[in-house]
Image (cartoon, rainbow, N blue to C red):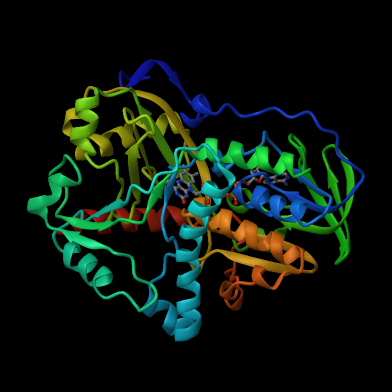
Length: 430
Ligand SMILES: Cc1cc2nc3c(=O)[nH]c(=O)nc-3n(C[C@H](O)[C@H](O)[C@H](O)COP(=O)(O)OP(=O)(O)OC[C@H]3O[C@@H](n4cnc5c(N)ncnc54)[C@H](O)[C@@H]3O)c2cc1C
């Protein structure tokens, strides 16, 4: 290890210090009304709906509860749907494009209201986002895309030119940017624990360390063979997103697992933390090789994530490159050490949009393309409503095809060349 690592360095999520992964001792029942595979935000939000709707509900996970992305992420919350209105309107027509983007807005609004109504103690804060131009040519691009929102999709965004940028970030790395005041932050693992508590209170049986290996049967009479035995159910929800495997090959051929890497710094002095991120915003920028960062909830450490390696790697190996990206933005942090480094697999899709629905009687919701704090929660809730047969569970996103690609079976061989190309594009932007 080089000296960027603190002596108490841990190769696991910083969030697990604040919210250790719970151990639950539960046997796998022989049958249930609904079995949900995956105990992240999708699985638990679906479970809460199903159990409160009177269904006997079981959630299983191959690992500890919330072990996947839902306790590892950056805790940044946005309106989340990646393609813009023009691109979506070209693909699906104006009405569907509006409906899809509106779902991103609905998700952001819904998660704030849900956390408030449920009283989940998870440092949810409407802090706003600073989305920064990493090259001067990017500033007018951002200004154009945020300048004239479609009616009904307003964001209250406003531009911050470079000369005023230090009001938003203590750095001269950028060429101005846009503030999106409605975006929010959360402690992701504490949010997950809050969901778990509510699911258990609603009567959900959560069985950790139970891997689903085989699925058979048809709508209304489904069987899962698991590492802890067999369970039959009327409904099954697949909530495995970036960890989707051979259980459901159809989904595996449509999900692109992309490793995202992330570090936490040692605590900074309060003065330095305030100087670097004065308004406690969450921050992202126009680099195609995405970075995302923020202060942790107690306001002292910086949590800095992104994709820095061409191939998947050990998070300890990724930490120096993340630290270099951090210090390129904040040279004051060159001597600041890293206390935690970890990674997780984000579920991308070929159309850059999430997908939910049912196929052969099996429900699913997945593929949030790196914006799953709100989207996984919201669509998890919606897929739970679909299982209950409620009309409000339907989403305009169901009008989009969940596409695979020829010669793609779940191993993203095209990622390395794409990342190299993105790196080249980022470097040549001026
Ligand atoms: C490093 C990182 C940073 C991120 N930052 C952000 C962010 O700032 N903002 C944002 O909105 N999103 C972010 N995301 C994405 C977000 O965390 C995810 O989209 C979201 O958590 C997905 O939730 P989920 O419940 O669908 O899946 P997950 O939380 O990944 O859960 C899937 C679960 O399925 C289980 N599983 C898989 N196969 C099986 C099987 N066969 N049997 C049993 N269990 C199985 C896994 O063990 C896993 O626990 C980030 C992701 C990562 C990795």
